[in-house]
Image 1: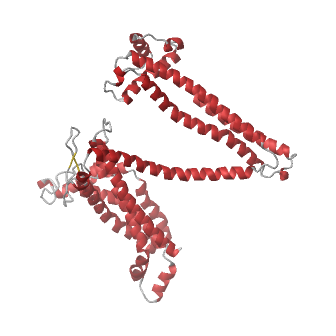
Image 2: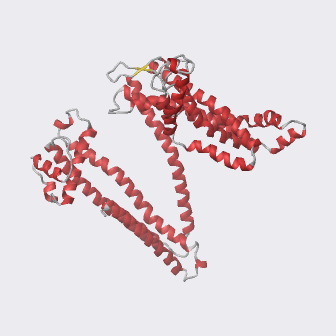
Image 3: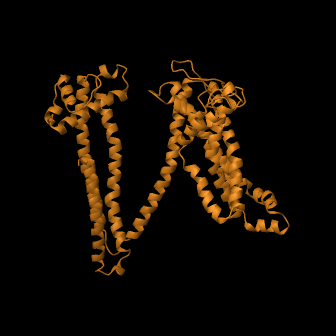
Length: 495
């Protein structure tokens, strides 16, 4: 099995980590004369400290090197290409893709013995030889290999090999230095536990920071691309226009309002299905169902939340849509004899299926919130002569209302961000209409549509996807913040 240099470096770091753990632990025991009571920390902490200093700096350097080296080499090699190739209008990624493909082909030819290392680095500018060699080892080239591309590929191979060699030397040196230093300080009075616990705390802080920085990075990436879009397209047309008609040849009408209307319309239909059913299910499970029924019904109900949305989309397309057409559509074929619905894709189709998908969100959260209402409030109501149903209507639900509202808002944000159900069940028409039997589309489906196919991210028709995504992000973020605020305030009241 060919692990490559990087694989062997990782194995060497693991071996050093294990060895430094054992050696530091043994050194600490030896320093205490075999009496571990004389040690500041337990022996394992000395081993953890050594393993930590052997592995973490080296692996961190390895990850950074693997991320930075390809970009640096590509920039260097691209700058070596002559203007005749760079200025031909070719996309940089396409040019470098050709360079990498030829370089990988040379590596394959060298590994298979079809080409020596010296010949791979000193091939003449006649590229017919290299095409025949690469074809002989099963490397397909889509076009003729320019001599300049061949030279760039040779430079790419040379620099990659040199960089990988330096990476192995530097990373292994860091691992050895870390292991040696940590073993040397493993004495009886060394506060190994303090160092290990501070490192663990630092890792926890890094993990929390990564989550926050990832969110910030997502927002900034959408923000910068949205700014590029608004440099090409009027923001007044985007926010206040009434037509969505993208045209990659130019003169596009890119207004978010028809898409926003479809998004909100489908979400409202979904909530009209999910909220009553989910709330009634929560009331039954929390107030009326026995423990046996509850232990069986609640997990079964929550299975709906684990079904992939593509399955819901197929259910909408193949089952719910044709069923609605059989009632409302296609003239005499419809049960009502009136062609109100021309196809299986419609707002009602997507809304019904999305509502089914949202039932677990509403029911599970509402059930937890209702159960959080103190039993003393129920007992007081029953003691005053109220029936069970009156207690639920007049005491339990009003007390749980803030939390239920938060659950509904969380379900609404989930509905607004749904894609696959809408793609398969609602259609692709952006328009204003109050008819739930018409086909419509949403913001998420248009984002997918605008970014599908060959895109260069240099036109307003492509960059509009980022403006749509940023608007959708702000909308759902606002709903989530409101919902979490309401739920948190409610839970603090009864905890």
